[in-house]
Structure formats: C-alpha cells, structure tokens
Image 1: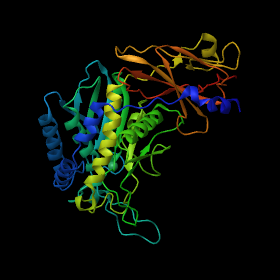
Image 2: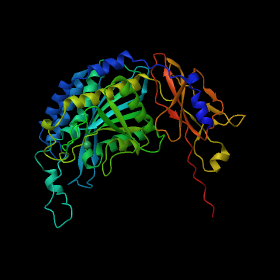
Image 3: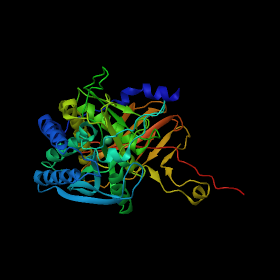
Length: 444
Ligand SMILES: [Zn+2]
C-alpha cells in the first residue's frame, strides 16, 4: 500500500521527455531494404552454407570482402575454431566466424555486439517407422545440395552487415562488433568459441543483440505480422540480459513508432536454441530477436528461400536493432550497484550484495552506486516498479550524485534500479538492485 501511495505521488516523478538522438536517427534512416534483399539473395546463391560443405567457404570470403569494402575503419578478421564431432556432425569441422570491429572513440574497451549466423542446414529425415517421428538422416543432411537458409539465418546476417555499413559511417563512444557466426546449426559452435575466448581475455561486453530468423513475416498458416518482433531474454526477472531486452523494447519503439517489440521473458523458444545462449552461459548479457510469424515447416528445409522472405520486414527489425545498438554504443555504461561483501557476509554464504539499505528510519530505500568515468556523464535516473510488473513504472532524475534516498519506500516491496544519462540525453541500460543469492555453507 505504501508503495502504491508513493507511486501515486507521480507529479514529483514525472517522466522526462525522451529526445531522439540525431546519430541514432541517421542509423535507422540509413537502413535499406533493397540492400538487405541483395544480401539475402547473395547468401542464398551459395546453394548451401552447411558447415560440412565447400560452399560455406565462399560465403565466408564474401562476407569478409563486403565488411572490408564498407569502411577502412572496420577492422575485419576471421575467428576460427576447431569443433570436435558432436551431435549431428559427421566429423570434426573448423568453423570460421567473420568479425568486423568498429573501434570506440572514448570507451574502446567496452563492447556492444550485433550477431547472427551465416551457416545453414537442411534436415533430411529417414522414412518414418510406425507412429514414431521420422529420425534425422545425419549423412544426408550434411551433404544436401540445397540449404538456402534465407530466413534462418541469412536474414540476421543481412541485419548485421547492413548496420555495419551504416554505422561505420559514424563514430561511437563504445566499440561496436559485428559478427557473422558459423556452426550455429550444429550446436552454437562458432559463438561458443568466440564467447569462451571473450571470457578468458576479460573482454567487456555490455550487450549482445543476436538476430536469428528475422526474415519472414508470414508463418504459412494464416498468420502475417509485419510490425512486431520478439525479444527473448534469460531469467531471472532482473538479469542483465533482461535489462537489455527492456532497452531494446524502449529504444526500438521510440525510434520506430510503427514497430512493437514484444519482450518474451524466457531464454528462447521450446526445443530451440541460438547464439545468444553461448554468451549467456559465459556470463555476458545477450538477447535474441526473432519474428513472431515463424514458418516452422520451411525452416531447415529447401523452402527457406528468398521467395518466401520479406526484405521489408527484415529491414524494420534491422532498424529496431540499429536504434538499440547505436543508443547503447553512444550512452554511458550501466552503473555498478553492488558492493563487496563483508567477511561475515562471505562466511554466511554471500558472494555479492546490492548497494542498498533501509536507512535510519528503516522505511526508506537508500541506494548507492559507483560513479561512472565517462566525461560526458550528466547524471542518473532512479527507476522503480512493483515486483510483479514487467517494465519500469517510475523514473526520477536525481542529478549527478552517487547516492539517493527514496523516502517511505520499502526495499522489500519494489524493484529499484539506476541508469546513467549523458549530456545528450542518451541512457544506459538499467542496473537493478537484486536480492542476492545465498549459498549456505554446509553443516556436517
Ligand atoms: Zn538459426
């Protein structure tokens, strides 16, 4: 009830008007459905991009050449990993990711990624026996001559390449990384190799926007949805990945008022996977963007063709990506809202604590966060929502401080977060104060 009263006192907490940033607007305006169509057709023209095929190497070279021709400021490289035979693979395979890096101006060590996979697959099935579902013929699948993979996932690669083309004409604070992964269809192979290296080297990755199946808006069964894209994010409710999903929704819908970003609060669809998960399992925030109107009958079949794709829809989803990616790349980093644990806390099973307290009156929420180092940092906003609400409900601009007290707000009954804002109004993703996990030491 107290929270409700606080939230009703909304006149003090009025939402600040959100400005559109000119560079972000230029990025979304620069996306061309025609160029995306050309990329989809080109990737289809290789016939197959199965990791066992020779054709995939031609696709690798083509993507590398395209990135290289876009701008001398893009640093293009091939990132190779030897994947041992597993699952549906017929043998060990070296997979090659194509990576283009646009170095950041003021925070070059902080990275935001947009990713997709350029390998494709066709699943050939053995004749069904009795009522059991037909088993996959691994050998026939690996050698199938036609695996066009246009929606899955030339569409994501087209988004990555189009944004590399457009964004390499501008400068960003953070380093933007554009990646076409290989081996997704055989178990996220290229992404797992890249993410493991990133973790080993201590690479700072603030967000991964993975695009997989964004090329069609018709599910072949009567559902056509051209103005919605789903964003999947891992649990729990305030995971860093979910903060990115909320950010994509907020910025995507702000810059593309005709598009709805449908946040799905689960890691992925049932029985399905994607390269964002390779980052999540290595401790990095990452989300997956996917069409609402998946055509499950055409996926992983020779019918996943350009003729069945929608370049216009793919371009709209690319613009949503562009709005989020460019905003993130220009904005400050999310504030650090945790503190080191005390010796007693460590002995009680805590490894991290939110920098949050009840205050002297025990009914206030006292928040602290670490000052950001960005030179254009203007201040912070505190955000609040009910524990059962999916999205932030209130926002309070608190200025350039590193501590703030919300009077008469129980920290137990609300979710509270902080975001950083720069002089041009660009906002970081939100860092939420989350209930820490506690691993009780065993008693024998
Ligand atoms: Zn895919």
